[in-house]
Image 1: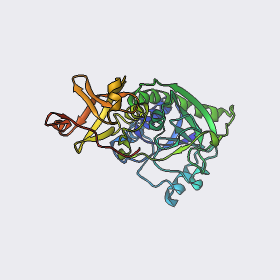
Image 2: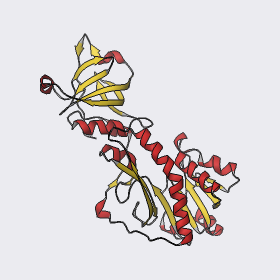
Image 3: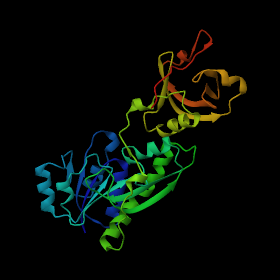
Image 4: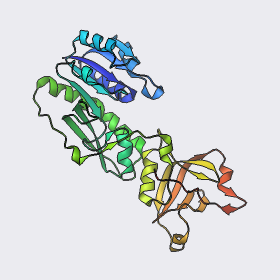
Length: 303
């Protein structure tokens, strides 16, 4: 079965290499290199002597003509940054498939793993589905669920997902080649679409529920830009934190108030417990305390 692979990032790189190792017939590779985050797919393609398209508009007339001439049976998409339009989708006889880091129909759209951790999910997953006009709405071919801990950070979640991607995609290709599977139509009423996140979405509202603040910190920690707040107008980026019990006398303090600063970290009063910030970055750490006084974090808007 002749396949065109479209992808980016380490997820795309590892998956492409796995498909090659499994002797899949990859006739062309397409990748967009926006920054270092998306590199790697091109290296695998070049190392294996595959026809490579870099930074092309896949919906342009010229590209569609080239792909049509290649006569692919299937287009496989893994972490690709362009939306395929109908003319391109209709080229391969066996369709186009996409790999999405969520248990569809939940968390359609952008940053599904981040959103899942923000919402305190205990299970994430990987879905391979057919591409159609809608975003992540096509019939499901295969899914793999992944359990995560309620204190697990996004870097660990990414590692778990990264390990699953290549095998799930390969299994989906095998199913399509055999024809021995049932397409599962998505019930979109059981899921939601989430849009693109930006670094500024990580600003903490200290009036939110303590667990929600902790989940935000977990969800956008490294390798993402990190949750942040302001102390005396200096940005504090929070990489790691813990939820700790709140003493009765602390409950009267305003949310976002710095209770203590010591070797354990920065203890901040929140709505129903406290947050202990254990790993952080700040341009000027002297701004946390001024004239020996404990400062309050700047109040912020909701994420």
